[in-house]
Image 1 (cartoon, rainbow over the protein chains, first blue to last red):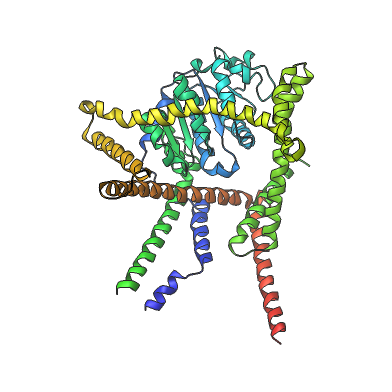
Image 2: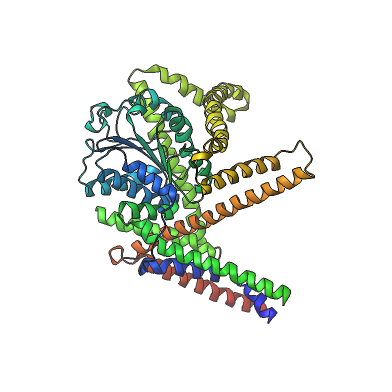
Length: 273
Length: 242
């Protein structure tokens, strides 16, 4: 019996890959609809901060993620942007990751049109800018010193969406969705220094690292990974890719738990029985 | 080519490259190598055009063409870094590096001291001055955070020999670190599954009839390749055995 049990521990790992692939693929073809019942405090805070910004205010979205973190961060950006438009906020989008530009293009082709928002009047997209810290520091004194033209080459100062916006004093909230350490820069060089509330959206991997900033209130709220995206979608009542991914994540986590439990039970049986 | 044709071609390339790269999980094969080399080559080319069109053109060429010669100063400092490749004149690169180090240190040190050092110490101590207005759970949370911080700092303090009570405290610090690593690992697993789900979701999109069943056809072709490869491999082995 022990030999048979030990065989299980030496199973060809490709079978595990295949099982995992099937478990993740099934909910895509036929969604099960497993509920996402918990809303974490940090996501709730992120929502609350966006929710309490008065209509007509200018909110800056720094979308700094590329295709490698798209599945986790794109749903967050879609949900947050949809809610900003729903709240009739003016939106400015900047990026410090060159790979983001295509994803931002995808975003603005879809989301503003759903809410009937007009480019230049309700939202504006700025071109990719190298050296995030230099750009953030410059924006503190003069926003247009670094962004004089939008992505379409229009004079930024003359756009209706930028009316009354000169520097961070005129921006009540910064939303940074990123798979990099750019959120650290927003906290250190802008949030702490100029007292601008910063809300983040990060990958699940980097989520635990932001605990200290959340505890001290340097970061007002945090959306973490696809789970965070699903929670934010629940709060804004707009189910999207985050919500549909919860089925797959739940099943995959169950599989991992089962494998860990089974392996440990087998090891205990082999050693002590 | 129309936009639709481009989109279909994109779906085929995307599905093909994804399946080629995932095929390595079964075993190494030429399709994986093709995708791997293509990724490296395309990545290099893409970055080159990013630097050219998003940095050099708007930040150097256009201002120069407009008569703003001040941009020559940062441009020359940047170019000085390239002299590293020519040993005889590599000393010139020191000017660029000096500027970068001075600028970086001046910007980083005050911000990091304030954000990551002073604010964190204040954040650990502050709750103890607000205990009267805090709930029992919040007080417990503040105590755990403070105890964790002190124990982990003990663990990383190497100027005192770790024995006796110092050892006990630093051992508790290890448990706090392990809890953090466990949480980080759990989140890493979740993140990897999310990324895999994202690729599968795209493969599902490429599998649609409007994309001429790109995923299914490429998957079937890969399966056929592995079957044929395995069959021919066995045949060769049998011939060698003879």
